[in-house]
Amino acid sequence: MPKIYSNRLVNAKNMVDAAYKNHFAIGHFNINNLEWAKAILTVAQKTNTPVILATSEGAIKYMGGVNVVVGMVNGLLEDMNITVPVALHLDHGQSIEMAKKCILAGYSSVMFDGSHLPWKENYEQTKELVKFAKDHEVSVEAEIGTIGGEEDGVVGNGELGDPQQAKEMVDLGIDFLAAGIGNIHGIYPSNWESLSFETLNKIQDKTHFPMVLHGGSGIPQEQIEKAILMGISKLNINTELQLAFQQATRNYIMEGKDEDRKAKGYDPRKLLRPGTEALERETEHLITWFGSKGKADLVKK
Image (cartoon, rainbow, N blue to C red):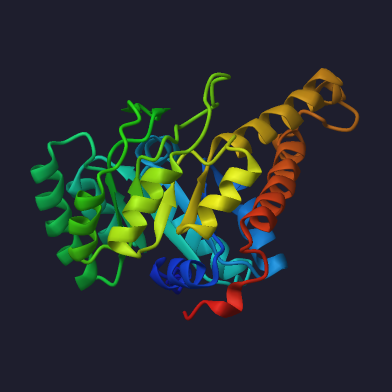
């Protein structure tokens, strides 16, 4: 009989609640393959840090499907003996059907991004998903307003979140809330000025609830730190890790190391190693910046 891995995943509620209470932010890191997941878990375990591994719908398709992702992550948790809290999260799920599919496959946390829908429809679908997720002990993230930019085909114009809508979403029983506060996905343009701290403050006044900052890559450190103090408790990172991986891989190739046949520089394990090591360095840098490094013991599993 093949071995069935025990599920070490936890939902993200306790870690995000601890972050909100203690004024730090949990790093949510989008993964794209084995190297990505392994690098982040290596750093998390080494530094005693709770983390969220996340996949967009595009990344799920790229990796082969939800069962591949769940099997890969659970296998790594088991074989690497990961003891820190780790959640596996669906990022920007575009339908509750996709979120339910991830839950049934073994994801421990899901986001339903209904921000592209009319408000009432977003609210009603989120309500349905919350009930389903709670029955499976899975945490839920919802979104109001929209996040600017584009990520895996999900496009937002950057509409600011409405505080009253935020309150109504929180009252549904979600676990953390994403809201447009001037943030965007991808690389920030040169004319971008600032997060809307006024919007963040108004939402916090209404909800007193942990919030999520999407498009965390590229926001100045002082703004990130201010946002964390004001209630941002989960920070989503994708582009910064992609750029770190790309630059290290490019350097390896530009130096001709992939053409060294004697050293077998073409071996994918060697070809991908510099990028993987860059992922580890950048992940540790970011969790230090977010204040979550070494905070696993503050999270109730």
